[in-house]
Length: 261
Image 1 (cartoon, rainbow, N blue to C red):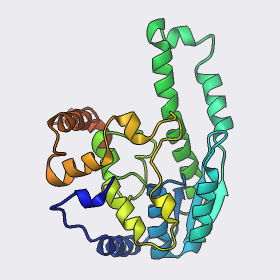
Image 2 (image 1 turned 180 degrees about the vertical axis):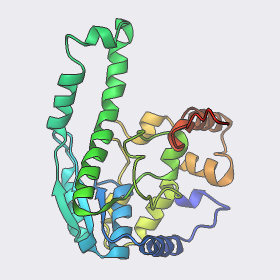
Image 3 (image 1 turned 90 degrees about the horizontal axis):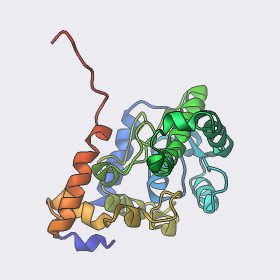
Image 4 (image 1 turned 45 degrees about the horizontal axis):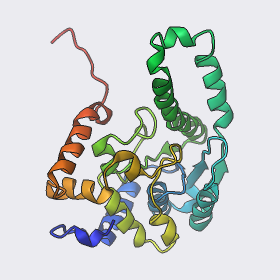
């Protein structure tokens, strides 16, 4: 992902960084809480909040689901930014939910068609993690009077690479108008962030694949599609458009059915 490939795009990372810091200050928020994954998005979002509100007013929550191999990266970010840090392991909660919701007595009712059982259960279970993490952030945030900072970027939202009622649920999102490539560029302007974590290969930490491998699309191509109107490859454009259309519901508020209109 080489930002220099995107010719014709004028992007001033320092200007964008400073504007976002100003906007966070202008919201009137006093304290924010944010999930820290150790990846670029949560790292950059946390750094912006720390600069805007002071590190003492930012609460970084590490939320491993059982064992997380790169948990040390999350800890390193919290230490580098000097923000409040806490670890809440959602593994036992996840296990308890599975045991209660899907067990031997309920499985036949939930999955009458056994041929689809494995695939459906696996996809549903992958999304449990982000939803449980958001529940924890909401729980802790309300208890300390902090609003939840989102960490999703525009590239992910465009192709629907996000979980409804999970990482899409937040009180504000400083990265929502930036592509994945632009988030990295902003992160590079912040010397308090370890450079290798800003440039760390994005992954969901669940599938064992990188985001690009799972999507089948490169982030640089999504970036070009958004900013230039085309990735330069017709087949890639078609794939992105299909994902965009299929995930439209994730970018909207719930539809209200009004019988009075």
